[in-house]
Length: 159
Image (cartoon, rainbow, N blue to C red; front, top):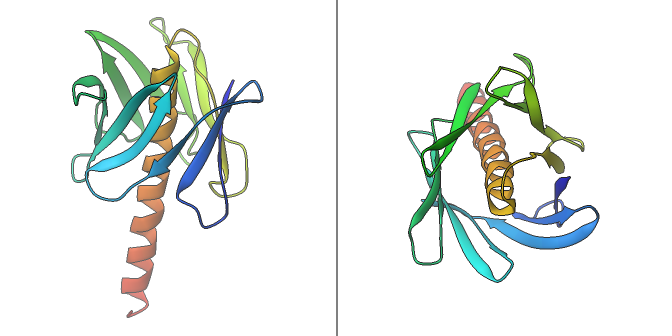
């Protein structure tokens, strides 16, 4: 199981572990680059398309390795002509299930701590870099939703 946890309360950096072994860290950035990480000596970037809700996994040379649909209640990750589908587990939940071809639940991405302090991903059948990508996409989506709520709250309060 892949797990991500913030390195500190105010940090924009997460430490990723797999079966309690440190794998990498990734930093959440502003702008078009959503996050960066290094895995097994290879550098990856996650590009976030701000208004469309689409994410791309980029290799070190800038080539697109994977993309998502607009990340919302249901979304898909596309890699080399193959798609993996995700669906929120419940209307009020932020957790996602990975859905197999027969509609069965084959994996999950779920919160493990209070707020957004931790997340765990069990995504069998996906390469490790794609597991990190899917987990990071969900973290970036949660972060984007929290920012939107904060802006809305400030506007309603007259701030």
